[in-house]
Length: 75
Image (tube, rainbow, N blue to C red; front, side):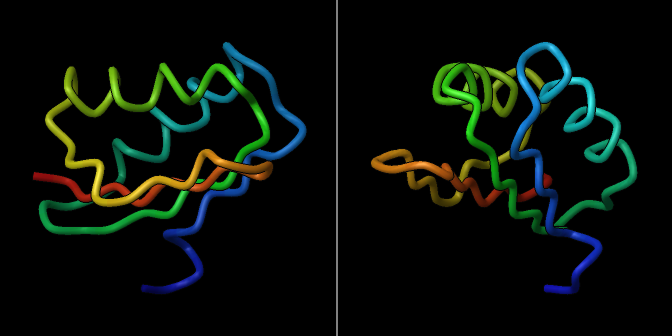
């Protein structure tokens, strides 16, 4: 995992978090992993929905404390 596949969205709120995330996801290739770090509570609901909709795998998530983190893989 290189630094370019770590997306720090702390301080942003929806819809900005999802807009930045969608823009970054467009640049990934099949099999790429990305770590998302955020403090936006809406991502607890939005990121799993986004993965389902855009055909990504939610490999791991940590939403028990802020900042939340998510590990996604492009199918």
